[in-house]
Image (cartoon, rainbow, N blue to C red; front, side, top):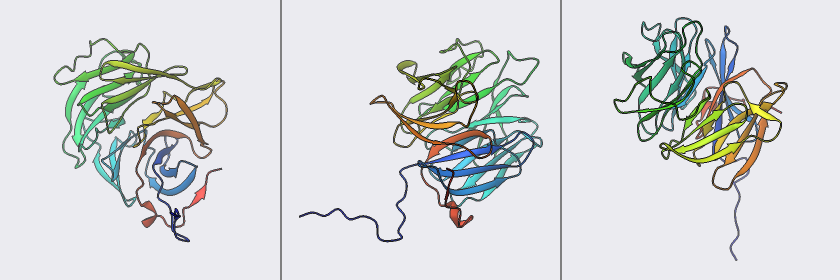
Length: 296
């Protein structure tokens, strides 16, 4: 008779995935929480200012865009230690989002004051212009950027409003959008799938330029902020949503794309969420012990 054995007493079971949630206000210091799928905080990293965009770097780090104080690109390693890659760079004056594909070290940065996308690396080399953007002359445009495993750039904006897919040397800002509205974008680190949101409650999943599936938020829910979403390592898609009347805390939802199932994970009741990504567990508690607690 085969008996299934559980973990030894006091031995922690490593979660299948965790969520990294960036929080803070526009002018103050920021935090990045590491949270499991049930809402338990596994670690916290303090930042000098709030990160508005994050990207998973391989399986052992996060790269962050911080628009304050002349602009910073930072990296958090797998022990929870933050380091500055770039700061007060003349090219990137107000970085608001970052993107890294699969197993790459190249970092694409979106800047909504300079109105550019520029490429650097996880080592912080001098940024190189990828594309200059038009369409937003009087205010800072919203920007969401992702890079797919086939090296295409997915870009959402309310400047030249839409969701765009750019690749190779075709960096033209005049390319027609694949979706008409602005929204958040995310790329699957293990395939060529990507996804984008469209207000108030739609999510489109693509493979290359081919639309694979349309998803919708539960009734009475709308996108949180400009549409925050991230693929998990197991291929599911996590989305932040809130009540359609824009009251109450945001909820994290997880979609099983293949089986058309939705699972509510937990509400976020701490500081204001500015972005999140889903990825494997990193042992941040080596730098922040005794952080195990529920957000409920």
